[in-house]
Image (spheres, rainbow, N blue to C red):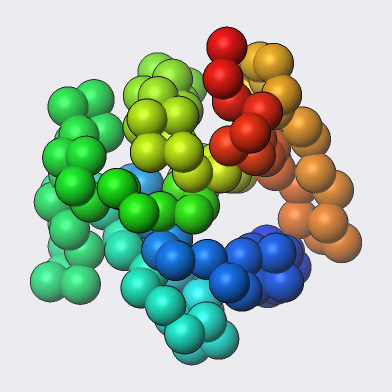
Length: 133
C-alpha cells in the first residue's frame, strides 16, 4: 500500500517544485521513497522530530516559509483536529493537498476533497484550484 501511495505521488508530482510532508512522526518511508525517485526537495516536518532530516514545525502555528513554494502538501494519518490546519496551510500557499487517513478512519471530506483509490492506496486529495471557498 505504501508503495502504491508513493507511486501515485511520483507519477502525479514529478514536476513539482517542492513537496512537504506534515507530521512525519517516526514513519519517513514515503518521504524517503519520494527523495529516491524525484529530483526535488522533499521536506518532512513534525512538532517533535526524531532526527535531523525533519524540520521542526507546529502546523497549528506554522512557519509558512517552510511551505511557501510547495506544489504538494501531504500528511499520513494526521489526527482529525490537525486536518483543518493542514488544509489552511495548503490553501495559503496554493499547494495541492493529500491526506492519508488510517484505514479504519473516515475523514469528513469538504468541498473539492476527493476520495482516491489508487491500487491498494486509499486517500483524499484536493487540488489547489479546487480549494478556494
